[in-house]
Image 1 (cartoon, rainbow, N blue to C red):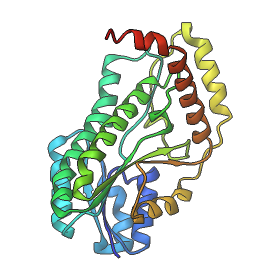
Image 2 (image 1 turned 60 degrees about the vertical axis):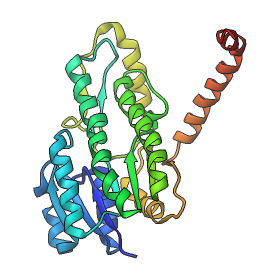
Image 3 (image 1 turned 180 degrees about the vertical axis):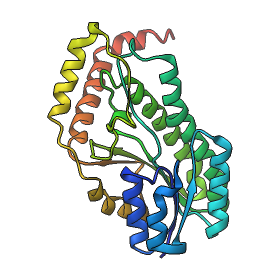
Image 4 (image 1 turned 135 degrees about the vertical axis):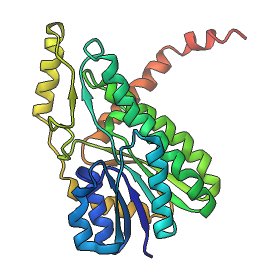
Length: 273
């Protein structure tokens, strides 16, 4: 069955790969990007099965207009993939207020606009699948990546609660938790890096060393997983992509539970009744 997708951030990375995967099997895609000219080759290859739209997800009115245009153009939207966003690096003391606000305006409030724009369409049509791209850092944080992680933790909370709200209407929600992939996330023109303070030299050196050992995944290898996900009758709330995150996340969560248990008596006594 042919599906209609609405995908944000399609000029590069996962958004581009998944757009090509959907079009490659005959589906239709509303493909959005800040610069829609980056999608000209897709139009040339796939014709009227792709609708390219310029979109800055921090522009709330533009988000609603794009979603409505996509739904009107193709008649419905079966799958929405919210992929647009960016990363930032820096310790909490190094990060500026402007940097923090920009991170949340895009990764949190931009996502909120997308979810609010698609909700009435999928609710009224009685079906749909919303896929939000989070990160392994949406479940476990790291020094110097706390701001980015915080934006993804916020997305996790939005999406999980949203899933419960939309389920009665036949709409599914899935959070994607990717490992490190060669998506351009760390390119100088996309990653925002705060000026380093000498006081945190050891912290930065440790993370730099860790990053130098990372095995990067191939974005194109994720196409099969995403197609299987959107075709599933029972998609998961969370889907990890790549090797490594499951063990890391499981270890962190086991540590949390152990800590909760160690402080259980103090927690219970604090109830007062």
